[in-house]
Image (cartoon, rainbow, N blue to C red; front, side):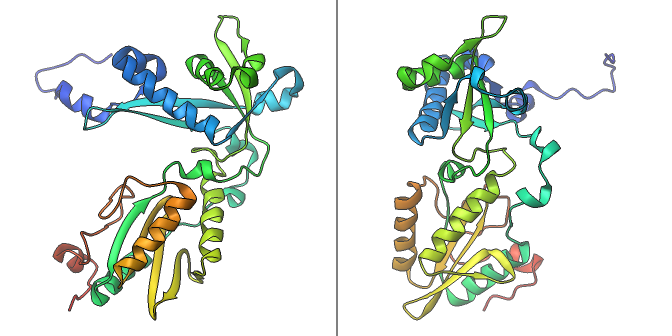
Length: 295
């Protein structure tokens, strides 16, 4: 390990706390105690409620299925308000070995489409809402036979959801750690197919509601409502909805809430990293960057 010198720069511990705030299950439970336990249980409960997992007996699985089973990962993070959030995903890296990129790639919204929509919305003084879909991937059915391995605390917690369903499938490794194989019935974050499966679900839903996909950008959909155009753009599970009539936008939000569950986020939500804007108008800085003239 390199020795520190007078000229070396040492970052304060506060910076490390800000950048490295995600903890694995074991470390998270030590750090957050009961709050961490409740956060994990909430995520595990969601998997059971949405029927995302089908428990499997390892004796009924082939060697190849056990070998390809993805690891289930969960991390705990303390949010700004002090609450503890559990984030779950599958370790989908092994899928890269036997999955073609073309078969798992999801369409994404272009930055040009986003910027042009901002200009149109500002020009027409549209009412705009930016929202996300909670637990988006778990709404989409998994189309392939994908297995996952639950370990330790997570395996024990899923058993608590329905002992009759899960307990008989628990087994223990050489160190006495509880383990369970499950088949994914719903798409899960970080599996290679997840984004594409959810895109198909959202695209089909919007088509059922009368929207037409833009032929040049498969993440832009339009529909004429009350004589005016309503536009929906999305990046993975983040949506931007606009129309001159506020009631139209709120009606679409109600439909989305009914279909996918109520989102806690709305308006000027910036989690996608794209230049969303406040209320109806582009900022002067954004107008200058993208050479958009607002009248």
